[in-house]
Image 1 (cartoon, rainbow, N blue to C red):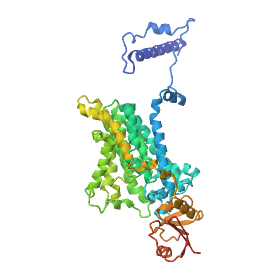
Image 2: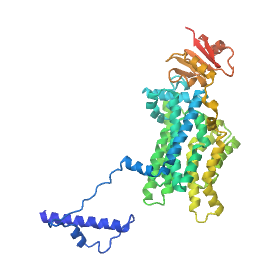
Image 3: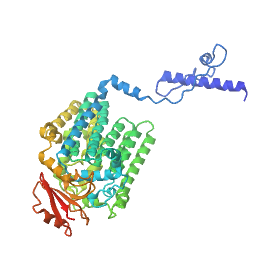
Amino acid sequence: MTVETVEEFREALARAWNRRVRRVQNTGPGPATASPDETDVTDETDETVGADTAGRTRHPPIPGPAPRRPLRDRVRPLLRDPASLAPYALALALFVAYATLAVCRYRNMAIASWDLGIFEQAVRSYASLRTPVADLKGPGTNILGDHFSPVTALLAPAYRLFPTPVTLLIAQAALFALSAVPVTRAAGRLLGRRAGLALGAAYGMSWGLQRAIAVDFHEIAFAVPLIAFSLEALLAHRWRAALWWAVPLVLVKEDLGLTAAALALLVAVRARRTPASGRIVALALGVAALTTLAAYLTFTVVIPAFNASDTYDYWAKLDGGGGPLDGADVKFRTLLWLLLPTTGLLALRSPLLLAALPTLGWRFLSAEEHYWGTAWHYSAVLMPVMALALADACAGVRRAPRARPWVRSYAYHLPAATAAAALALTTSLPLSALTEAAAYRVPEQIRQAEALLERIPDGASVEANIAPISRLTSRCRVFWVGGTRGVTPDYIALDNRGGRVTDPPAYARNLHPKAAYRVAGRAGGFLLLELRS
């Protein structure tokens, strides 16, 4: 190739680039159509722009990929517009409230169940780079054979630095508070900042989150922000982001793979009428299929592989009930609690409620009564679904040209009304304890009980009921009372404030007929028995 040919090629390339630039400038972001003048390869403007005073041809540089904006450039708009910081300020306030409530309950030994101890034992094992064993479920029990929640391993570094159950409680408070950010942002984009902030506040005070905080730590703390971020991305038409936020749910708990599939189906439904919908719909259906398959394999293969009985123990909870109508009154009240104070029933207009069906399905089909109601943590994963379904429904009513005036007015005022309802209901929910001085004081009997439990040396094996567990799992091997399966523990620690154990040595002989225990101490209604050497 001669030098003249190379120069001609470069000039043609420069003219083509200039034509492309002018098309974009003239037509904006839509598709560009070239005018007859722009298709003429002998464009005089190109020749003028392409020549310098020395007669040499200048060619405009071909730009590369746009550089990633520095963090300061992304933060600066937030600082110029303080109102845009409202979702983060709300999340911070909620974190303080949640964490304060959780820590106050812990300090007062207001422990709801053995779950906090079980999760601490698992996280402690992860922090020590060992198999996640929870002796409270039985000596040497691999927790992955009970519920498949490997996501809790993410807490191991923090627990390594702060080996206490309070680390788990603070982490849960942070995760719940974090979920308020996508809920508030998404509602703000759809309804305006004030309505979005009101809906975010209503979400933060929702009864489902408050109940979850009050029953200590559970793995679903990770699911709540994942669902919230996924739905935020879906409402913003960021389809791939919505899918990627949903996929990790398969690592949170075995049933949440079905929730991930429901979120993927929502993406497929919402994206079907958008540009390039074919690829997105195919991707979403693929994710739905894969997450459903992952849930099926977790139930039937993964959990049984880690379970000593080679099965999934909770299948039994689906048997023995009277069917879906058993406890219909309790289930109906739960539905009312989900839809009425949280969404004013308007969320029924949004297809986002599809994401709630897997959780409601297994709960209402179960024969376990405490799955049906509102007292535990099982409704926490439904709160972001309800809040953003309400935002979606309100936005739909506002866009609908034929919406009746009263419906439009109802949708306009509903976010503020749900915030007011949430605040009013909080007076009878766990966060109301923060207004009581007694919540911040540790009773003397609790101090005495803690001093008694501190007499147990580190590394000892202990059989305990609920209250002592939280003070022992970080430094001892702890078994559930009556669940040692042949292991004879060094100590038996009991919360006996109800006076149930009247003859401690006889109680110990009933648990361990071949061992002899003596009463090592009593304090604050707690009882400590020590194995005689």
